[in-house]
Image (cartoon, rainbow, N blue to C red; front, side, top):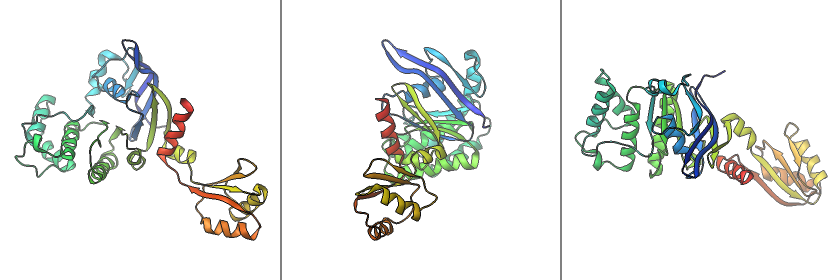
Length: 305
């Protein structure tokens, strides 16, 4: 069983009369890239603020690297790097000088770590350029560089792709994969661009109105939204017979007397249409539906409304 490095139980955060978190349960395992999914205001940033010590819960408890005592949590938080609510840096300083400030604040003796981290995030050639003059993508990278100081075991990133162009998003995605795969870093990342999380995350947490709706691994998610063939026909029994003959190992579901679905479909719709025609099956509609994180999320949100 994988080690759980962060656990939240019945976590609640109340502001006056409204709840940012309302009895949330959550688990993050070592070595994972945890995609945190939810609408704006769902509670993602509040959870990250509590995890990193920027806020304190109203009720419930958290565990970080096995520690549950609030008074000792600060020790474990030294093992966490974070960029929450945007990158924070000194705009009048260079990238190198910004990291030097963080190095001194954290008491890191090795000065060589600055050069190493700048190379990791692709800012090694920024020289004397001030951070205020960086592009948005460079600023995001500087925020991540600051979060990486001290070689954290858990990296927490709140909407790191905000405002980035497609090239910047792809570059950041590869950086996070590299940190996870080559350095074994566990990453908690939220994003409203679900297609990016779909290419990055190894597990997901879906949050809505401060509550965890579902937590799944990538493998579990694929099974839940596996590709399928959706057909409307004049004779569902004849069509089912054709599909079972063509795809004997696939799961087949008769939805209505006119509709059926063939799961884990990876064939050619033209071949299906041809075989149905030979067996006097009149196809009214045929669609190959692909697996999609966005689609699964939308269906999940419909269920909780």
